[in-house]
Length: 164
Image 1: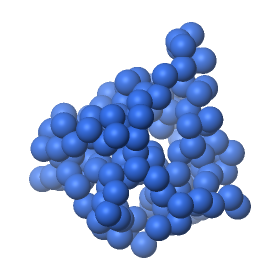
Image 2: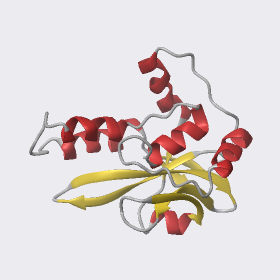
Image 3: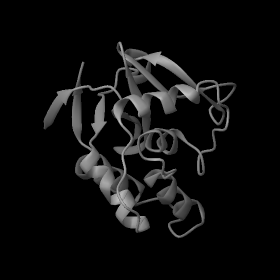
Image 4: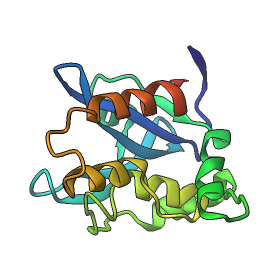
């Protein structure tokens, strides 16, 4: 598995909660230096969230930290027929810092992945929310394929381990 040192403005993520070998979700944030990450944290309940700064260890909760490389984010632009644009590391961090305290969390339309990708690209997209939306709408009512989908995301798309 590839690994590299964290850089300012990196989009980072951890794989969270497994049940029967199925990855339930990936948790995303933006690395802002000094071993700190800005991301959505639980507020009053599991479905509420507030953008906050935490340490890498608080973000990881014992899980492995990965980096979403820019070349893997290129497909987000291609899928929307847009020209590729990434904000600089400094701009990405500024965008993340401006959102500290925001309480607009929504699992399907404004989650941690939406937030982190928006900070880096200006696009509010979430591969997980797209997949979850399809599953919630009943196309896959028993959720049998969800573990396979998230294993593909985890192993194929964004799998660079962070060094810090």
